[in-house]
Image (cartoon, rainbow, N blue to C red; front, side):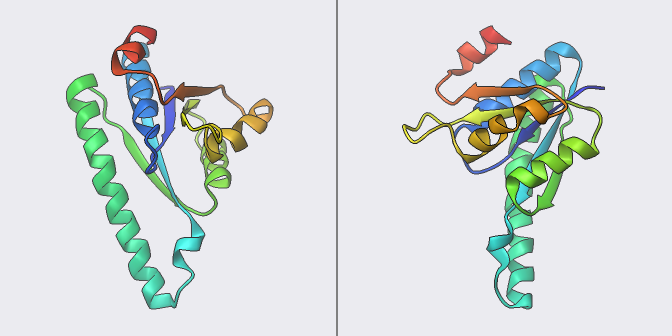
Amino acid sequence: MRKFLVVLDDSRECLNAMRFASLRAERTGGGVEVLSVIPPDEFNHWIGVGDIMREEARERILAHFEVFAKWMRSKHGLDPHLVIREGEPVEEILAQVREDPEIGVLVLGAAEDRKGPGPLVTALTRQAGALPMPVTIVPGTLSKEQLESIC
């Protein structure tokens, strides 16, 4: 089964990327894999404190994921899969893509900020020619209705 890989983070544009991935997966008979990356700089503390912070980060990710997963199950009939990785976000996204041959499309949300589309979109579009699959960039400004009409 072809899976749409979407990155779960705290950005506003993440919501549109989730919507797009869900709509496309539903309409094409695919699946959704949600990747969340915990950056290493969050744990530069004593070992015990770092372990507690790592566990808290995982709990936040699981709670955030469950909101999207419940919505995908009820609205689109999908059962998304969550992957949590630790490391530099771009490196971990690329590693996940290389390790899972069922991933067919990487879906990223683009910020509507004048500073640019966001660090992930900027970094991954520079490497798009070397990726083993297409990258879909979903503008953060699209409405739910616009997304539904596109998909």
